[in-house]
Length: 213
Image 1 (cartoon, rainbow, N blue to C red):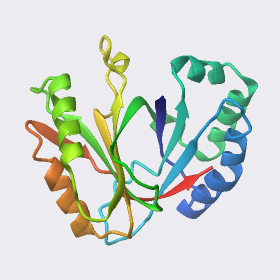
Image 2: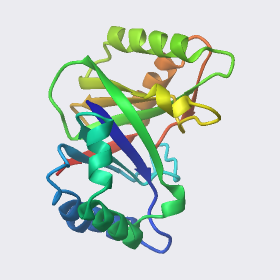
Image 3: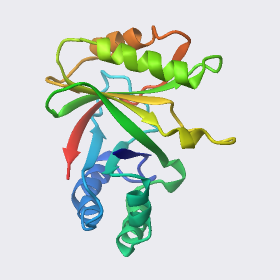
Image 4: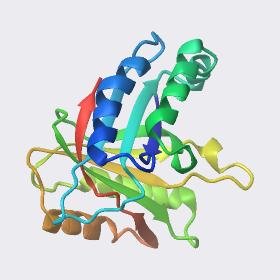
């Protein structure tokens, strides 16, 4: 299975409330019309002045496919054109970032409403394979209290061909059994910052509510 992770920003002039309502209620119905779309998940940031907020990310959409051929099949359909046309209503197209990744579940458990998501880039002096191995090893060892489920999303190696590289080298997702505070976020980031030579460069408002459609 591969995961198409799309990081989006709302269209200028839309309030967060209108953006989230349209995405959840109108756009989700258009996306799920296609029989080629399997699991579709929206993650909506919880805007809170007590939490770190990276305002370049207003939402994360994930669609899982059996393989890249299945993803290409969707891209050739009328349903996909309808999805693209509708995105123009509420999404800033210039800010969209797409990452095709493979998910590694490191803590088995149930999906819950609250998630912590951390976007990570490796240091330039660290080999990608070394970074990925060490990060996954740390994730398997992670036993932070209140984590229901955890995964590491690693971009497909094809995304690094030539001069290309994905916006992030890894995305960590933690499903939690409670609404967390900034201290919990800081502690988690500090733990994973101990990966040798790694830098945590993106840290998107990190608490999100999951909506599966």
